[in-house]
View 1 (cartoon, helix red, strand yellow):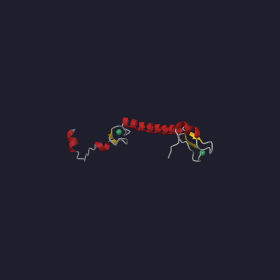
View 2 (tube, rainbow, N blue to C red):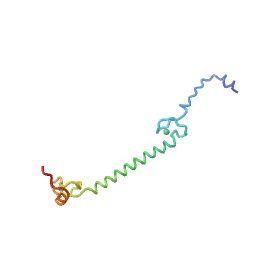
View 3 (cartoon, rainbow, N blue to C red):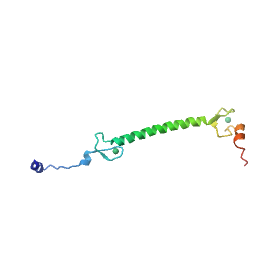
View 4 (tube, helix red, strand yellow):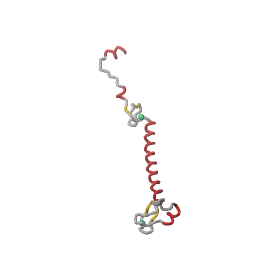
Length: 105
Ligand SMILES: [Zn+2]
Ligand SMILES: [Zn+2]
């Protein structure tokens, strides 16, 4: 048996590394059939869910921003709640008086 294998002079290039597929996530050779390490596939899914979370967070912050805005009674435009003076020149007198006196400048 061994002799037969020896006599066969095929250029047997044992390239295990090339036979392995490379994990697309971490770039390391993987033995798994799909080529992706199970844990890598999971981390990838994590990344995706993280992106989803980011999206949700962005939407939440958007809602918050909407919450922290107030409509100007003069021009009906929504301006940030922390602003005391609208672009149209309208002054939110109550808020300005209650929160901070006008800066003398
Ligand atoms: Zn991997
Ligand atoms: Zn205004």
